[in-house]
Amino acid sequence: MEFQSYMFVQIAFFIGVLLFLYKEMTVAQKLSDRTERKQFYLLQFILFIGVFVRLFNLSYPDGVFIDGAQGAFDSWCLANFGIDSNLASYPVYLKSWGTGQSALYAYFALPFIKVFGLSAEAYRLPMSLIGCFTLLFFYWTLRKTQKNKLLVFCLAAFLAINPWHIIKCRFAVDCNIFPDLLFIGICFIILACYSTFSRKQSLFYIIGFGIISFSAYGYAVSWFALPFLYLLMLWYLFKAKKIDKSTGIISVVTSFLIVVPLLLFVYVLFFDGDQFQIGKMTITKLSTGRHESTTLLGAENVLSAFLKNIKDMGRLLIFGVDNMSTSTLPVYGEFYNVISLPFLAFGIYRHWKLKDKEPVFVIFFIWLVSCFLVVLLVAPNVNHWNILWFPITAFTAYGIHLFAEKSKENQILFFSIYSIIFAVFLYTYFDKRIYNPFNSYTFKDEIIFSQEQNLDKVYYPRDMQHPFILFYKPVAPLQFATTLDRDSITLRYKSYDNVILGLPEHIEPKPKTGYLIPNDLLKYIDLSQFKIKRGKYYYSFIWND
Image 1 (cartoon, rainbow, N blue to C red):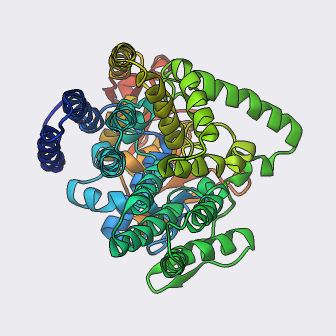
Image 2 (cartoon, rainbow, N blue to C red; image 1 turned 180 degrees about the horizontal axis):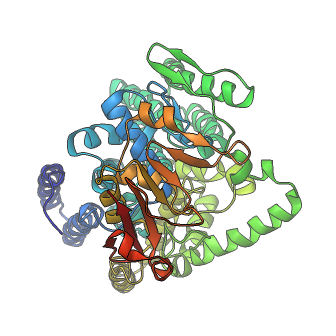
């Protein structure tokens, strides 16, 4: 791992984290109970480890995911030209390849890409930082609101070692900014619930509901759940007399103003409106929505698709795997599923049976039940269901706490079990022989080299999709959009600038022309007629000046 300029941001952030944890250590010193004091000291160490594994060496895993490649290119376009790859000025939603991506993460990444250039590390950095902040803010929220120190320990420590959140923080894809923003908003609501100062309480509610509304820009699937979450939470807060009418009205008005551009986009998307601008902001029109491919709403045979979803749901919840193998590892899953499911069930059961329910878990329960449409309609997938993993993590940790509080021996047992499985998870995750989810690193150097030769035409294999080429060698958006040629039937990209997607039937030497080809095709080519750069992995580049 070489030192890169973006690491200055990590170092500055890490110094801030160390100062925060040191301050928390001084708070722990004031605890009169020796056991609680030890627990808090240990918790600071666990939080330190949690931050470190989310922040360390963002070059890993090698390569990029295709959605991340496209999102990063659009972020680069916005950072340098003020328009995305479809020439839209500061769009509410990215059109990308036609079916769209949420734009929010592209804006979070924009300043980092502007300063440090387009790279996997620069694009992953904001996700990593926000994930670390979420972990620490959740801990701080619990410390400020919960008297039970063991409960604080279990919830904060379990999030620190949560495998889904660790992988998510190091895997920048647009949808995964959403759950952290939602969780931060929920933490503000929790702080407000326990606050005894009316002004601070009102401010926390307004900020919390505002961030929850803002999170809707992060992922379209969230729209199936956020309205229910928002309304049920307001209903609970009014019923429990934890929020006054004026604060509730201000929160709702603020939230509405925040989502107005998104509502306009939804209107254009579902009612076939035209793309338009408000100032420099573009209300995007997509070629088609992605809801048909991710939900039952677009299924030809709804019953068959539903039964398949049930089967996939079982795999996802029990074994923690989906059909992508990019966002989790088998066995460890999203929350160490196999060994943690009993604690999740017990945590939810105990909360349901309690007459005097703790507000923090009422809020998590509302969050969980608000996801019923996501579970019913959306294809089970770690990223599709990312709204579920935080409340599931919280109730799992609550279930562990209920067993751990029975005896010191139980506490030692649980700590030992989860410490071991966490250590094994880290070993597995950071072993690239086991976790190697992206293959774009196998042709990264060849793409960069091919575009540095100043050729008129460069042919690439059809399966080498254009976002990877744009990511490793970006083209100005105006040049990209005005030279783009798409198939009139399939709408697949055929060419842009000097890039041609799809190798010709006969590879012949031509002036100022190059070919990126699989190594197993080299034996069929007269290489004496070409210059050649042999690749390290599966591809080589041949060309003529």
